[in-house]
Length: 192
Image (cartoon, rainbow, N blue to C red):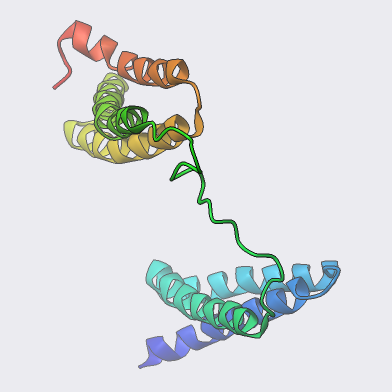
């Protein structure tokens, strides 16, 4: 029970930080003083919670701060008047308008490139990360963990870049560059 009591000041500081930041950001012009006070309270909350219970304390404090932020944003959304403009019927080019072609083949190709090909490229990137880690003197276990971390992270970044690129040639260049990272590991025969 003493541990829970030690977390209370950190949680209170986190909730107060959200309140001060919401007050500052709700003004017509943001106050530098309130912004500084709010972010200082966030730092104080992290320090207090960390000193009370380490990373677990910081996680518990952040839950309180996030709950306060959710309430603040929810209240602002509830009170905001509806927009006078009518929302567009078109949603980010998902569906063709009027007589535009559906481009089904292009959409399927993009899906396959971003999912299947980008996943394979991210696996090649993970193999390269593992190889470079072993080359740098890391143990097998550490190299494997780095590869397991690099695979999903690489896929996320690569998928984002490919979806933001309009040119199919650039998409293939991104894929080719990512696949090429595994060439040293494959050429030396130490990929696995």
